Image (cartoon, rainbow, N blue to C red; front, side, top):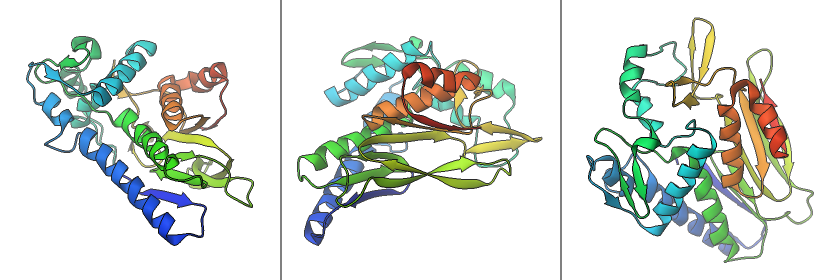
Length: 277
């Protein structure tokens, strides 16, 4: 998942805790191995090296592609799993380097879900195009792991994969799980905001760790795939609460893509959120 992953279990049974940890780890690694774009021998690699040849996918991958397509349509192309190729231009490592626009424009020639041919269960990408499920994969992994754990025990637990979180219920003798999220003050130094989570999911999108600082301007890592540049006037951080981590992550990302309209978008969805600018 490219981030620390943890499982908290409300139990005094060490054997149960270890068993659940093994189950959670196995499911996390299964999803990582299957859907990571960093690996050379999975279905994503097969699609990204297909050079215009249709690839038949299984039902799980097909469901994720259907979901990604629905987000593409919902956002008028601003959520696009083919935009990961823009990583060849941008490196959000806290440096002061921004790419030449000519490089971005060249890469944009291989961006656009509308250029792909998706008819379940076959996907065909034009030569040079790629997909990257990073925008939905971690949240999906949290929900799948939580579902698997829920079939194994009735104790309270919290799954945390890199800040994407799901809790199934309240721990005993507690009013909620204490969750800290990055917040930003006027000094530009990160502090912690505590949220008491009773049940459900939290997902955060922001530029706390991935950004470019060029000539006094901070560029966050959320890119607009229609321009190849970071979204303008987006909040520094948005955390959204929802029933599932997939829903929370979707809403947080879609809000960031709205730029200055992020909070208005979330108000329209009538969801609980925390925004920092």
